Image: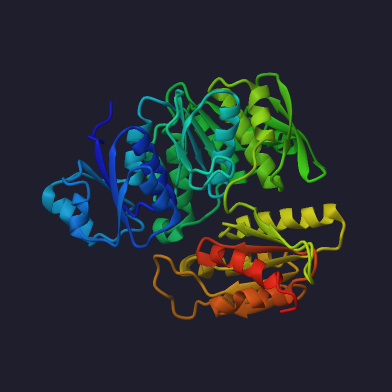
Length: 485
């Protein structure tokens, strides 16, 4: 039983990746849904087509979009200021205000909960878990921070008993959940603007492990030292733990029971052929269409999580073979088939932490090496947050040095005000001499700057958590010109 009346819900910032997913599930469950956002968008238009009433802009009267006041107002405390007029009106009217994580916990009540956490890879691993479980006939409900390429959605109200969701640690909201299966993909200091110290950030994952239900399991990546250490501490507290990862990592962590060991991964044309030995005694094989060692690890986590909620390993593996990716995760936006840039491909990726940037670019380097055509890797990167840029400038420079050519845009501040002395130059000044670098402060000029660095057959990436994604199509258009830019 839920603790709140969810028959009439108003969501502030309804077009966001997380909020729009919650709205989809509420609509599927028959709730009256209203909301507001600062701009119109594809998620907003989709929700309207499904019956939601949504205003562009924030105003007190938006709480009455359905004719009467809502039973609950939902907000993201990180993104929505406390003086938002709709929040102020809700307080005046005595309407309960929930965080998105609070509402998601309400929606998951009564389900077998699979929660996927970690500094990196949450969205991809959650998405793989959903696709694998669907292939096994489970029809799970799910809420993901990105859009599944094949399903074209980020949330679904399923008919099955399992609910799969991404657990966000950025504001410690993952501690709201009580998972039956909790997956930790990796742990690396991030969101220090909220946590203050790396130790506080690590602690939130230990606390999350402690939220696992009595008969549940914590699943940790053995290839990540911090995740493995978290698993080891959980074992000492009496929590059931299973690890996943490469055979080398399993051998290096013999005290953590191995649940899924990757015994083989090899390039097979455009795909990666993977073999995994499970704790059930099964060995399963599948072909993964998304490149990169990190994606192979994510797939093993999804496979193990699926077995822990009772799905058949072979059917889960078949689902992983059908997995086509997530929007903004190594997403192919287009390929030039003719003209001076023939063979060049443009991808878009959400990577915004040095480790993520390095993983994507390493996967890109593996891809061009396997193709053997002499192609290069070009990246247009937009740093996200002044605090993150300042904290990890050297690490970003090292990661971007994996590219052959790099265009770095101005910092996308998001919720932060500019910090004196912190610009994208703290990254570009450190990039290795072997990488051709351009600092491009003019956002609208970036497509031409990228095109000028591109050669036929190159892999070109737009990368970051801000509005850099808007440039992918413009770069394609610049490359498609009849003459060199």
